Length: 309
Image (cartoon, rainbow, N blue to C red):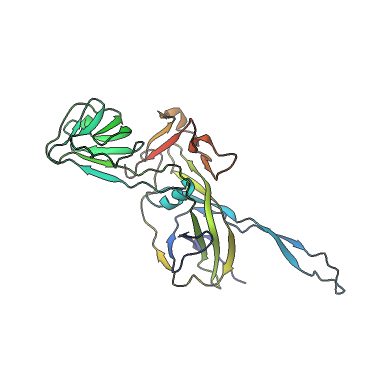
């Protein structure tokens, strides 16, 4: 019999192109996690056949529910692909825009440019970090509420009208996720490194059916991805020509310095909610109980995270 311990277990994943099919020569990404409950959920039933030797004729598999959770501590860029699976979309690309010949200015309500397409790649709903202005109130984090090629309306508004010289002004936008419709799935490999006989459990067609984020004052920012899958199997060898992508070492986020804002319907939540564990079950797999926060409706919830603040 083979034995293994939980603290010697690796979790690795690779995105599938075809649901339930591991890509050839997979590059498995190591997953940072604090615990998991992945299981094949096999249900069996004993055969009722009568035998002269009084033995059970067979044990038949009657059902299998491939599902489970993976718990984590949130860190920058560690789980972008899994959030993409949950939202069924891709993370937007961060953008850096630099002034050219003093073309960027601040106004009473916005940052503007004399070039017609300067801000075309910045999305409404993202935070921008502005630097290079002389007035300190024109630098820092701003939330984009409206956008055109020549203007970014922001909140809070700039402190003063100003035009930095030359290339001094720099505007950087963060990444953002919005609900989409493109389903994404993964092969997840659970590897028991200290088993006396090499043992792995492979889960195929794993889709993120929901996630939670727990944010409490004075605590690490933690969460959980919930999966549902197609099938699973125990094996004693890896995939053909598989490689491993090393896990990053980005710092774990906390609930004091890494949360820029939480908004519902465009209104920023205040401090009375900071001591609660919230954002539970904000997103579920499409079905009858999808919360309105993440489907086309009158309510919208946004969470803005800042790494390394």
